[in-house]
Image (cartoon, rainbow, N blue to C red; front, side, top):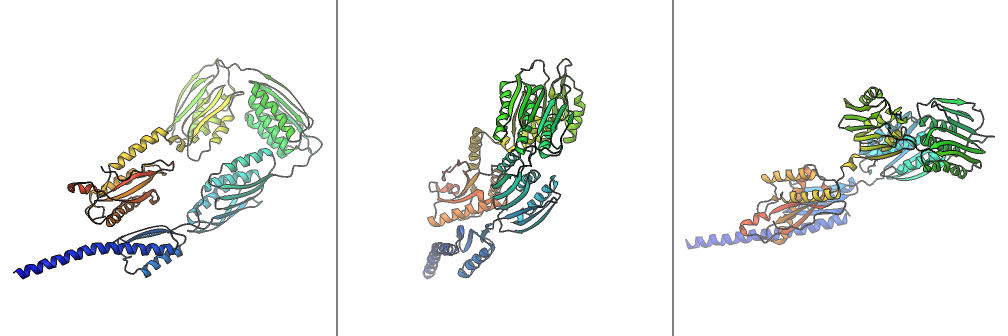
Length: 619
């Protein structure tokens, strides 16, 4: 019996030593494998490698520049490290192929109104280029767009293709000899325009294109042939009629620009064209300045105005509201001299303050499809047609009329054609207020997606009374939803508290997320999904103090990795999650060591550089 007990005791000691050796040497073997994998990945020059092992089961990730290299790295690992179980269900190999080929697009615009788009883009951008082509076809200057592109997963993606389409459509309508090529984030545009006004417009449009560096060569084309004399007279009559006389072909670009300016200043005013010559042409730059002067006169004058311009003289006659308005009008003579004009200037500009007492007012508010119209007006008969027009741009709107009709009020200039400002406003804002008086036209609101605020401003300019101002506080939805610094600080504090309340716990010597702790991960994913895209999170793993410290650090990292993988599986982008092993927490009593075996998710940082970088405090 004593011999049997001795044998049993001996077997027990041997088994204990074997288990201890298995743990210790298994850990050493893992460390050796990790070093060998790191050496192989270093030889292959991969980027951002992450390596860990559980026994012989690997978790390896890195960035490579091509699909060929990804295959080569995996084959090298399998051939040189046959003892590693790469085919285990728990093995994790993730070699991410980074785009490395520069996208290229070329646009060949033909005189017949066609354009051919060729080049090489990322596969994800094929639909975007097709949309770009369709957008060009909708413009007035392009009849047909043909796409001849190749695609590849290795090509870098392109930003803001819709913005490129809108820009090119505008440039093609305005300029001649257009040539466009795109390489990566660089766009080269070569074009010619007729005058300084068009040149300034195109340069402004080019500067507004987000996501690209513009290398432009937009220049003035050769001036039109000069003749003996160009002269022009624009007169505003008491009945609202605009009378235009002059010496120049009606179809010349300079005269067309000036006619557009006169017509645009009041679309309802009748237009008479008298005594146009057949051969004389204007200098394009001077004609653009005169057109701008006509627009300024129509807006600033109180009633009638007269403009006479020739190669020898400039004369203006108008009544304005302020000294500043008069100074602005007189400044145009200086602009003409800078363009090479050598004539004499004179004016009969007088300041005549407007009587704004008892004037008409109008206010329109939009909120969730509900439109309310209020104010004091002389005649409310326009409301019925305005309600019909609003119904044509909004789906089943509820329009409430709170206008106060006061027949004794003098008629305001803006009351004619008010639809020109109202309809773009109601169709362009999520919510907002349009307020009109003889002193100011005010635009406040939140823009719908892809609506350019300049369209609403331009529409409102048509009804700005003489001497009044246009003010706007229009915001995009993103700008309107941007929290204040105080709100952001409070939201971060709340987020930190909520994250602390959701630790994920583990069993002894286990890295598996099981049971109720899967529900905790689900709650974490919902919480993270609702945070701003620039927030990054630290996924921190811990262990208790039992056993080998190096083993525990790896165990903590694997626990964090498993929680990270569950979160990415629920839609949280991997690049927002940073892994970290914070190792052992050793101050717990034996009965409370389960608290140390956990993973915490913390607010690591945001693009603003702020965040919660606390290191494993005990709770």
